[in-house]
Amino acid sequence: MRYDAIVIGGGVSGCATAYYLSSAGHSVALIEKDSVAAHASGFAFGSLHTRFQPPPGSPPVEWFRSESIDLHHELAEILPEQSGVDYHFVEKAGLVLAFDDGEAAQLKPSGVAGFLRDEWPEDRLDVRWLAYGELSHIEARVSTEVVGALYLGGTREISPSGFTNALWAAAERDGAEMINDEVLEINIANGAVSGVNTSNGTISTGTIVLAAGAWGRTLLSQGASTSHIDLPVFPLKGEILRYNLGDEPMLPVSLWWGSDYASSKPDGLLHVGTTHTDAGFDERPSDSGRDAIRNSAERALPFLAEEPIFQQTACLRPATSDGLPIIGELPEARGLIVATGGGPIGIELGPAIGKLAADIATGQSENGSRYSEFSPQRFS
Image (cartoon, rainbow, N blue to C red):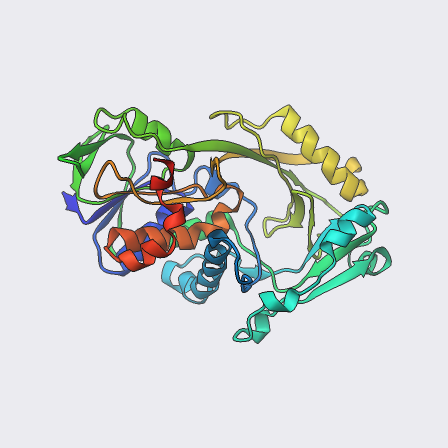
């Protein structure tokens, strides 16, 4: 069997790529050795910034992020019906907590109007500074160490696993095929991809999108015809604690402080995270991760000191040395396109990563050139 394109990896970037390729009428095989959203895309937090307009001079990744959030909103209108999956795209305000006057000075809104878009008045960002007395009326369990918070209205949350599965279900409806198998090697002949070798045989194609997350580098290094290609992506471990609050009320808003967060989710649990650890490919939850998250969480929400941890999860997010995603054709192999490196905001960037990878795969070079900063050639 020969396909127009093979996508390697069943995370959000791979499923988004398969979605956009199949919806455009291309024959697509998605190869995943485990299951859809089995790794980072199934254990992420799932918070989405409100729609925003980056100010002039903003780095390309901010424009890319803005476009991806737009795509999330577009998909929310059609994807549940296309896929039959409700992935809980909901509006939920957030509070960014400040623990001292220095943090408060950095958070207090200034010039926010320049980031907003008039064409979506219902999504205009409601930004207000709240002193502790005001924010305690929203969530009284916040620590008295907090001096105030930035209130953000118009933000959204989704179920990352649900969203990723919805993308795949819609792609499958449009004819994409799932192959549950392990890719052993990507085949290159005369400088171009010709297919992949799996544990069950060879599959032919002229286009491969490598969306294997943190494992993409390993896959290339183990192949006879790709071992000379170095893809500088590495696993960044993130852990989340989940609390079953029992008789305690759910949080009415999401809370953020530093690089940590807490939010009540549709599964009925309070999700609290996270860590950013270089731990190789160890996906096991760690005692150090648990303690770091719990200590931080109890500082923001002291009542959690009396609550038992219901569950601890860990995942490996694909990260890069410069913090930018890697999206583009590898110079060493025509037709081999990389789509990875979303890091801690991979779910938020997933639709844009998938769409850009699909555009490059189908020869829409104009779209690819707009984000040349993400090309793997920057590491050459």
